[in-house]
Image (cartoon, rainbow, N blue to C red):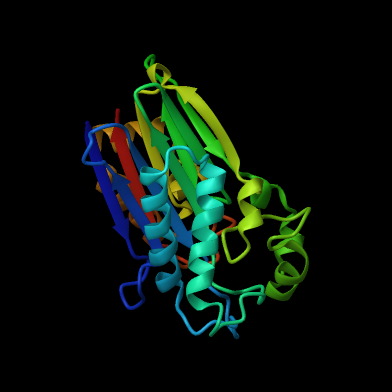
Amino acid sequence: MRTDLVSDPGDTTRPNEDFAGVGLPASGQGGCVIVLDGVTPPGGGTGCLHSVPWFTARLGGALTELTLSDRDLTLPEVLARAIRRTAETHADTCDLSHPRTPQATVVVARWSAAEVEYLVLSDSALLVRGPGGTVTPVLDDRLARLPRAALATDALVDAHLRNKEGGFFTAAADPAVAARAVTGVLPRHEVRALAALTDGATRWTEKFREGDWTALFDVVAKEGARSLVERVRELEAADREERAFLGRSKTHDDATVVYVEL
């Protein structure tokens, strides 16, 4: 098995809010990939004493432990338990009902000898390569489908769209959100490799249009995860002033790529 992981902060003066991990149990049976993209609060209060990296570290740790240790749980059940466990660690000190309470996008993939399970919540991505080379993206595109006008103000997003029906969903403090994730199961023999990416890395395809999902996957598989992030950074730097590519709220974003060949 080959693995490759890169997580690069968008701003070296700020903590990286992403979380990434590959779990390979001592038994040698199966494994998992976990990727979280912490949601940067747009300013103002969050109702929480803790930072986004604090939240993603704890949620990511809980997800990794539960994904590997309890295979009787489905991935939505794993996510629900991980959210509940994380919420319980700061429910007594923080207002977890605040719409900007720390939260994250989620990608989880878990494999055994027989199957590959997956879960995607919000705008991080999972790419699946089959034995014939075909790359299939697994996406939760609810945020992308919203009209740009609906995202015009942070207050509007908080009040009407964030973790609301008709809007989009992220992992925050409510375990029920796990039921909103995009999930599925594939036969193991239909999966040759996986790539999990935060939207700071998928910019290469989704924002800059440098290539489709297959081309992006090829960069990671042939040149390495670091190469994809470096390509994104070059494109961001070249477009620093003009911001000609729509949907970029900031020049650089935390960028995480995890690649696994099964």
